[in-house]
Image 1 (cartoon, helix red, strand yellow):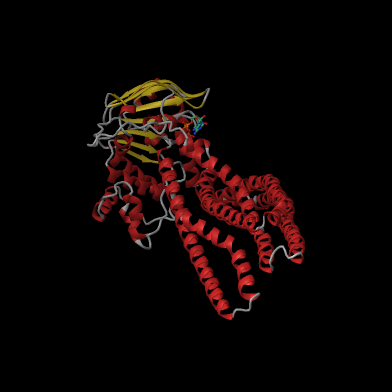
Image 2 (cartoon, rainbow, N blue to C red):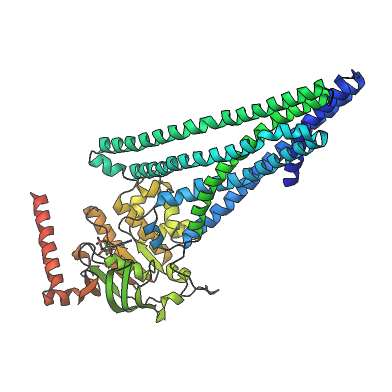
Amino acid sequence: MITMIIITGAVEGSMPFISGWIIDNVVETGNLDMLKIAGGIYTAVIIAQITTVYWFIFHAGKVESGMAYNIRKRGFAKLQRLSLSFYDKNSAGTTLSKLTSDVGRVCGTITWGIIDYTWGTVMMLTMSILMFIRSWQLALVTLAVMPILFGGGFLFQKIIINKYRAVRKINGIITGAYNEGIMGARTVKTLSQEERSHSEFKDKTHDMKQKAIKAGVIGGIFFPFVGFMASVGTALALWAGGVSVANEVITYGMFATFIFSSMQFFYPVYQMSQTFANLQYARAAGERIIDLMDTEEEIVDCTESDIPRKIEGNIEFKNVSFEYVKGERVLKNFSINIKKGESIALVGHTGSGKSTIVNLACRFYEPTEGTILIDGKDYKEISQRDLHSSLGYVLQSPYLFNDTIMENIRFGRLDATEEEIIQACKEINAHEFIMNLEFGYQTKAGESGKLLSTGQKQLISMARAVLADPSIFVLDEATSSVDGESEVKIQKATDRLLEGRTSFIIAHRLSTVVHADRILVVDKGVVIEEGSHNELISLEGHYHKLYTNQFFEEREAELLKEK
Ligand SMILES: Nc1ncnc2c1ncn2[C@@H]1O[C@H](COP(=O)(O)OP(=O)(O)OP(=O)(O)O)[C@@H](O)[C@H]1O
């Protein structure tokens, strides 16, 4: 491709000389036969030029999209490897813009920058060399403005870049505001805060408009500046050339050559100084992409064995402490030995550390201190594939993909047949509600499952878990948002899922944990009570208090409903 660009630049750089030669040898002499030959040559050169330009634009497009495809593919793979702590620290909007607009900018600028610089340099070099060969004195006069044109061009772009940086910074804020506006639309509406959100957004866009106008004013001067300098160059060529023609030092053809050359110099300088500015932007965008690609993976996976390892489900926490943020300990010196098939319920006030224990067991995060053993082995020595394929997780509000219910359930095991999926749903009594939906299993769940209720999403998520048949199962129990009928269904599905599996239940209603083998009462990152329901009730401690309080609250609510 580079060869084609060089040829194109050289041909374009020679055009003024071909024109000058035609003036001297055809127009001046009035040789009509020669005129036909010259016309033919000229047409051939133009066709060759159009073809090469098409050729390199086509190939540049291919290179650009190929490069972007590769970076985005690697970026996506990186995002899959990064642990949850990365998503805690980086907003979704910023990460998305790195892999979309930043990648687009870098690939576009590199591809077209190489083309513009190569083409512009070859074209200007060709013209300069030919001008010096023909008349070095006239070449010096014509090119006298070039240092000012180049220097001024690059200086201008530096100033414009700074102005546009400010615009882009606000642009990032506006993207974030759009993101929040869309994600938080329900909250804004329910709190009737549309006016306030709108007015905050208006302030931000107004600021961007002001800064963009300032950048535009300076940017607007640039083109006339380049044009003016080019005209000065042409004027000098006219003056010096005119004098030389009058003194019969040069021919008319050569005179025209110099005028055409000085005019043609204008475009590559303009193009190259703009590319220079784009390269500055691309550098910043490139740094952001490299920053993402070089993000340290906090959870380093060990090499996978060829044969997947079957996890039995024995879990041991040995003096485990954990902090999400350095210096802020949320789990303190926690130890527990859980036997295969045991069910563990975690209860405690909000923010006490229940989810943290589960997140550590699933290795979404690793302990800051201490060790977690699975089947007697430090779980850092078990591949994530083996661990996660043995793990079923049903979240409070499960994430569903914008796909059919059938495909959402299949996500539990990709090679599951339709019959297996339907059987899984029947086992947890989800089949009936799915069949009552307009398109049954082919009903779309909507973006993140928003077309379904929380209870329905939980049942679908449980069907996924049945398919996956995990040895460890985690249930983050849904809160009061689930109606009575769904609650009974979910409870039955839960009982079915717990059979024979090591399980963690993050319980919000204590009535659901009565049958757990062991209940851990967590408070400020410490387990303050541990035992079965009966043991903890007879202890008359924290659990007893939590249980009786909630029992009376639920009873009161029922009485109110009855009234
Ligand atoms: N990703 C995070 N980054 C920083 N701090 C976090 C993060 N997740 C939780 N925390 C903090 O860790 C502590 C324990 O949180 P955790 O989610 O484990 O509580 P929980 O008992 O599960 O609460 P809930 O019942 O409300 O779900 C809280 O103080 C919380 O603010």
